[in-house]
Structure formats: C-alpha cells, structure tokens
Image (cartoon, rainbow, N blue to C red; front, top):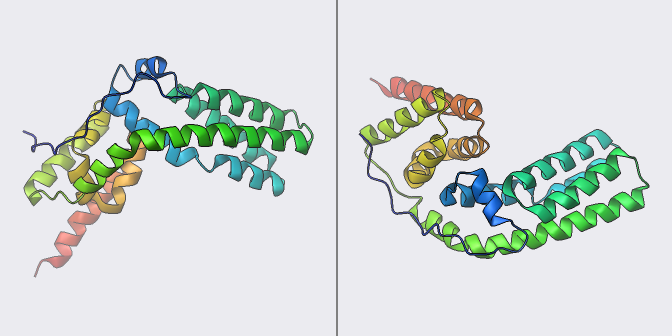
Length: 219
C-alpha cells in the first residue's frame, strides 16, 4: 500500500536545449524525463560555483583540489550530456594537470564559467515551472501512519539498492520534503547520484532520531 501521490508538474522535455544533447541524456536515464529534469537541477545547483572555487584553490596553491574539481565537473557534465561544459571542463582539467602558465589556466576557467553560466540560464528558464510547482507543494502533510509507510518503503528500496528509489522520491517529493525536513536534501542528492548507501545512512539517522524523540516525550 502506498499513500496517494501529490500532483506533479508536466515533465515533458522540449525538442532542444542549447548546450545539452537531450537524446543522449535521456538514454542515460532510460528515457525517464522526470529523473533527467531532477538531475539537471541538481547538476546546476551543485556545479554552478565550481569555476570560482577552482580559481580560489589555485590562488591558495591547492592544485590537487583544483584539478579534482575540474575532473568532477567534467564527469557530472558527461552524465548530463552537457557536451559544451564537458569539453570546457576537460580542457581546464588538462591545463591544470600539465601545470600550464596561470594566465592560460585562468583563460580556461573563464571559458568554462561562461559555458556553464549559459547552460545554467537556459535550464533556469526551462525548469522555472518545476521550481514553482515544487515550492507550492512542499507544505503537503500526511497522517503520521502514512508518513511512516513512505519512510519504510523508501528504506526498503535503499536497502535493496533498488534504482526505482529515484522514481519514488520524485513521486512523493512534497510529502517527503515536509516530513524529512533538513534531512530531505541530502537524501535526495545522494539518491540522484545513485549513492544509495549514503541516502540510507541519512534516512536511518532520521528514523532513529525520530524514534528517540517519541520515547523522550512519553510520560
């Protein structure tokens, strides 16, 4: 048994988004448009500041972290089929690895930032309706027994390393967001990255804390 799902926005994708290979991106998620849109939002939120962070790391002499961040951006862009960002991040990573003059590395950072910002703006316009719908539905509150059923269902999916956890957290986004509070974001991010072990750890911590709180409140 599963609680009734809250209304979800239209997940249809446009024919083209500048900077994305949509056909390739959808193939990576088995044509799951809902999941792809969520992953795109996570990508932009998590990677938007990377060029500035790379520059800051280099300013502090932390070349290893700068190269690692460029490599992570390249991989994340590849997973989204954001081909322009992927190509720029690859050039940046190589420039850092080869210890090219700082002026050349800075030029690669600037190019990567421009390409990433352009894609970010495209996606922000495209995903604005999703954000509005999500914000308007985040106050959904179910009875305690139904919320526990949601938690237990998600817990089982994560324990089984079941990829349908990605669909589940999308379907019950509003109720889970309200119920999990500050635990929701790290669980959602981990699931979207297919790091089910990390998501499971956060969910188990939440359930343990909730059970302890209930015990504390008993007379």
